[in-house]
Image (tube, rainbow, N blue to C red):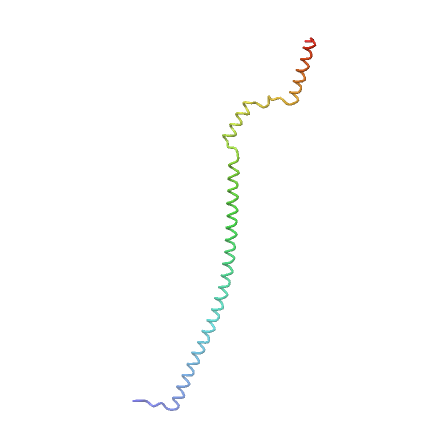
Amino acid sequence: MAERISFGQETDLTTDIVSRIRVIEGKYNLLRDRVLVINQNMVEEYKKMIYEIKALNSDIKDVRDDIFKIKETLKHLVKELDLFARKEDVKVLEKYINLWNPIKFTTEQDVLNIIKDHKHDKEEVKHGRK
């Protein structure tokens, strides 16, 4: 029925149990060290990721600012383009310039010479020379 364990067997059993406990403790210590290393690596990677995310956010902010500036510049250019003369407007001006023919206009000196000649002719008529 109940087996009796002798003293020698008890010692062997105790030694076996202690040996197994030490193996388990060794494995536990090894796992604990691995978990610590993994935890440290995760913390370092987390810090790197936070730094990279901040850098990316900064870059995104810069890109947004640049896009805003580009949009504002384009709006300004569109407003300036609205102030330019259109092809039809230039053709109308060309038509009027050709109609008036400014090349035939007189200069101020020509007008002064005409007035001078006219006065001279009046004086001659007045004095009966013509």
